[in-house]
Image 1 (cartoon, rainbow, N blue to C red):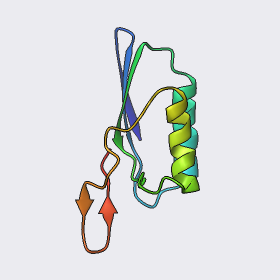
Image 2 (image 1 turned 90 degrees about the vertical axis):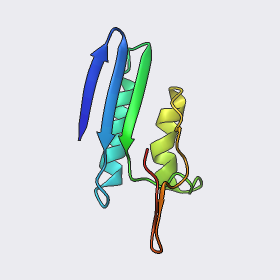
Image 3 (image 1 turned 120 degrees about the vertical axis):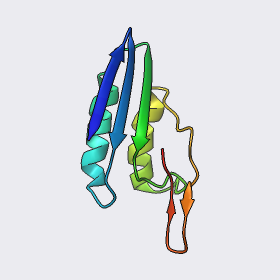
Amino acid sequence: KSAMKLLKNTLISCVYRAPGSCIGTFNEKIIELVDHINYKTLFLCGDFNINLEHEAGQITKDFADPLYSVGLFPLINKPTRITSRTAIQFN
């Protein structure tokens, strides 16, 4: 799911990927979004439920590379909720 708001050549998009949902489909939608950016400023916010600490993993690479290619970099790249079973990062 996503919500978008346009403010004078600025796009603010909030994106959520539910845990366990198809990462491939999510990545396709993110690529569609960044491929059609015609705005001076973009804020891509949300909870992606993708562990960016596993930099070598293909899932992380498929998610991050299209963002990096248009100059988008995560501000949070470490888990923000750690339990005995999981480490979750909120983006």
